[in-house]
Image (cartoon, rainbow, N blue to C red; front, side):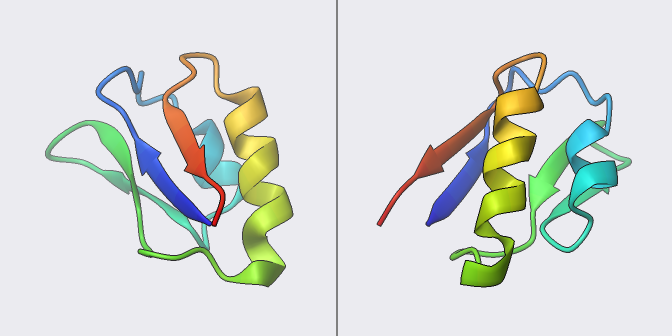
Length: 64
């Protein structure tokens, strides 16, 4: 699974709170970034949850 965050990110940090192992907040850009190129299997369900709960629909998941 690959995950990207689009420019639609509102910077509300919900994904960071839900899954800090994968998402990090960039204070300079004021948006979240993804720490991994490929999401580890044990974190994939919570990443899907973060994408589903993203108010801006800014988290894009590419299933491998």
